[in-house]
Image 1 (spheres, helix red, strand yellow):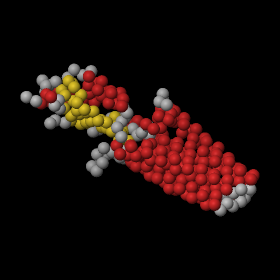
Image 2 (image 1 turned 90 degrees about the vertical axis):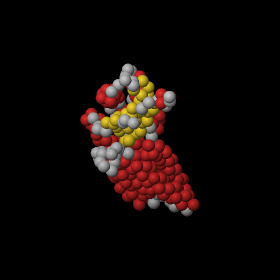
Image 3 (image 1 turned 30 degrees about the vertical axis):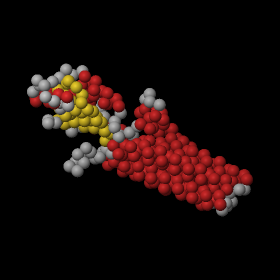
Length: 325
């Protein structure tokens, strides 16, 4: 049976994808710079204070730096054009590296912090130079808080009227969500570290310091599990937003030469790249040339309403009931 497909991305689609990628890369680089400064400061404080919570925070920040480098690799790979081995492009590379970040966050930050916390609770040690640790934690909290607010502003701009938590669960901008999750976990972790260090100093009981490290580890594990679940769905091939199928059906219903929509399949190929496959029943009296012209108009109207649709495959077919004698 005949099949026609348009596998060339329109210039405006490519520009939109490039713009989104540049914005995401900018937020990742900003977070990387902040975390490098914070990680170095925390490491110095952990050495002088002998605080387990401070050490957990230092490991967390160094882990975040590695994670953001992985995200930058993913964003860069996603921009590569299609080739013979990857005819649909490399957009889903972002999802792979985002999933790797979730694993790194779980193992590199969460598990180590939990281990350190249990060790400090079982074998508590007095904390030293508390003023240095508290000062660096407050400085880190200021920087991480600023980076988190910047992420929230970008998320608010993209989500428009969608509820915030629903957008985090449904968005395909996995790299931006990962950065936001890391920064939010860092703010919460710093809050726990401040409280733990202060209580350990005031009470003289090092177990408070261990409890702070344990709480930080649990926060990181929770965030890592959330990211792994959300990103794995995209990595496996998640359908695009329902509005795209709805639009395709509405355009088909508004086209006299199309008798029926037989099937619609959408797939998210990257943060700003969507594949649409649709099977249509056409008026039997149309010539092949006329069918091709109808398909071209259909694709133009579909892309005009959803610029993120890059790949459109339209398959002319007949209904099962029409094929019976």
